[in-house]
Image 1: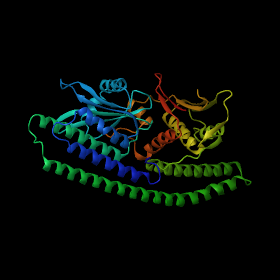
Image 2: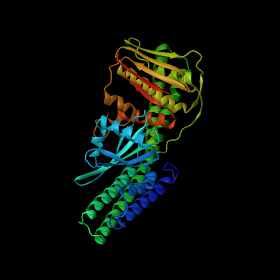
Image 3: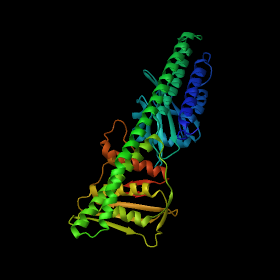
Image 4: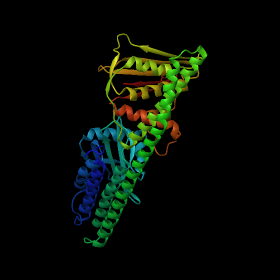
Length: 422
């Protein structure tokens, strides 16, 4: 069941809740000392398959020395791949940071444009291990409800490990029906609260979509009138100054319509309902218009240069409006970051016959955090840009992912920035 299918979300939520509840019951119904940790890790894999779109998961447990982590169970990938991922995360400090987080964290993988999810397996006062999953898609987005359910599953796993230890030392009786009943009641209450909150969230999303549709109609209608009248003026007998003024009105109105489209696309992307309109278009015309609209003033010390590779085919297949949104944003960002020097826009053919657009500037070099925010959302504890500035980068990342493209960022040692859309 795909979350993005019509009606698929509630079906997915119901199936996921049932899977989590069934897993909890199976853990709590085990007799004392039954099963090994590995067998219980393996039992969680079908539930994790339901919650996450991944191509490999694993559980690590604390070794006998109480320091090292050892792979205990792997699903859908190899021990070597998981070990390499873990060693990388330990080396850069992410593993230790994630170990004491109360919820899942999404981090860059060792592979470019890939992401992993990490969640500690712990009880109050003790860390038992770590869960790790390699996301199967290039997006770092994991639905909030999936994260909450993942936390419930990790709580069940940690609870089993704690109970197993206590039973082995004689502190817990074999038949602790009261405790089991309390756990069942707590899990039921949490799942019901989660179901209710998600239904409320869906209702809020519908209300937001209706509001945006009304705003779209209320803004687009007068803006279309402004642009249309400006176009009529341009077709009439005007003086040089009047023609320039009418053209400014037309361009400003068209830009406002573009902003309305971007806001609506951002809303649809957030709700998972954004659809592409594929078709053939002129790549040269699209990029030329984006460059013209971003031109600095005539007396500016900044040059905006467009360069097409020799023999580059003009026709391309895709969603021209969404491609234009991404290209315009990259050019505008480069122009805004460069007070003087050159912004170079290059268009050529990629290695697989697709097109590639590179935007290079000679502005101030960006730091590590700023580079990361161009290709993924900041972590919860990192500072982020204001909402009005973060809208377009977030939308660009979603559009590039939906179109099956890649957005790579390079920070040359000589300064400036180079962003490649392919």
